[in-house]
Image (cartoon, rainbow, N blue to C red; front, side, top):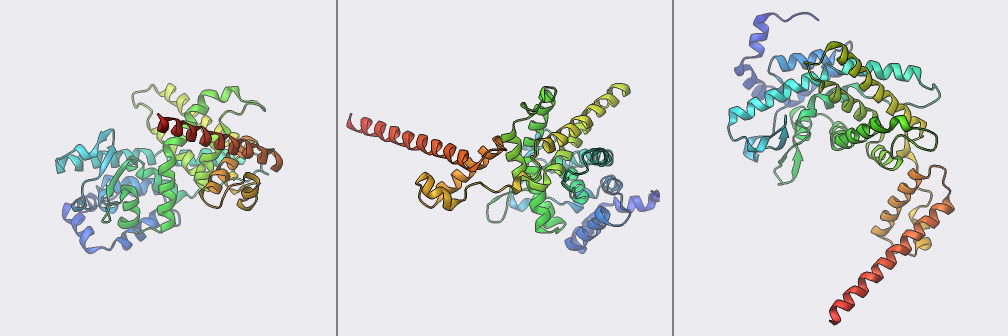
Length: 350
């Protein structure tokens, strides 16, 4: 909490120091120092990331792909980054995005406290999904850049966020994969949460407040990252509140956002969807082949997926009912193939 002397701030903001950071300091060392800020003893990641932005160091630490590989494309702070031809204007757009990153991160301590209180007030017997705070802070800090991509040396499309984590700070592959997964499903979580907010007052035992299928499939994709993704979405909504909003109205709006977060979290547990990704199919591939009379190959994976969808919609369903459902789907598929073949024969004979 100590203030930096102005001489230190001036030195840290010097462009020559920034250039030296790129040339003289290994990216592994940069990543190690950042790791200490995020997960060291008595750390305050929100203050550390805020200071990094204040000192204009964010762009040095989380560097962009080299421009000789082509400009990054996609949306940054509401504009098409690839359409910005001037180097100075691109740099300005990145600076504005880092400021947005800091604004997002400042909401994290309060959001984490809300989650902690929710855990303490919930059912002690229900198993909660853990949250990796360092991963959460890093994800939220890089959120404004999630829609940017570039072509790597193999001409393969890659996200800029992935480049930042893999090449700029040299974090582990697990961190790269986890943050990529959250970013990939962020907008879907946001859409489901918005829909939940509109329908949660209709919840009862026979009418869940969200579609079990789409929520279950999202959780199966995110696995134990779903709470981290939910918190990131909550933080973005808090950060989007107008600064001009009256203080009393803003307090009520903040309470409503946190309440939606808690209600959704509890609803997932009430519907027994937490850890749904660990649920194994009732019928494995060997059982599906004779049951549906299908060959080995992609068809098995397709019907495994259909089975997972049925199980999400029918949490108390049994193996026999699931098999009958899959047989019905298979019958419709064969009938559709037969109809398509007849149409081709008719068109060929004309």
